[in-house]
Length: 206
Image (cartoon, rainbow, N blue to C red):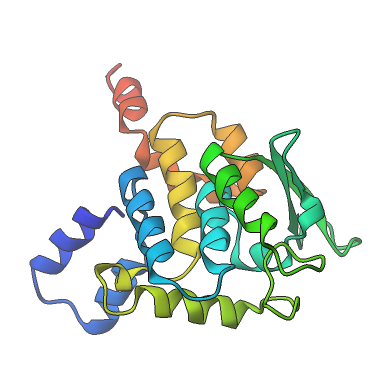
């Protein structure tokens, strides 16, 4: 659901706290909102890895776990792609991989971050070069948005929703979206309502 849709539901009244939270769990941000959100995180401070990590989530649709396990060697700026290390696609392997194009903004942010990187193998790491845990990443993101209008954003996964939703709303090839997201099931149908013009054209034959 978009931000205005959720606000309209809440404004009608009669929702419990749990029902309100469930609505915000469905949030996706449009392109302008994503840019505003990223700028807020950038200005909020926190660990130096946080802003580039959040940018990667916004521009690749990577899951939190995939962000944490990303390695510097996965970033191929010459080819303008980043390799996402994913689990569960093949139980015989520890990881499988998918390639996602590197957006120009992400390239700018990542290049600046790697130029001042603490060292080690992980793309996003602490000052001591150790891997950032899932809980640590979520904690610092929550701290960055605490007390702001963005406090309703439920973690990194909202950016994954937004990545797919904005591409679907722009009528981009669903097969590409599926590949970039690492979808292997009919979860793709979650985003089909964002193409109402397609449905109107089809139903119009009646």
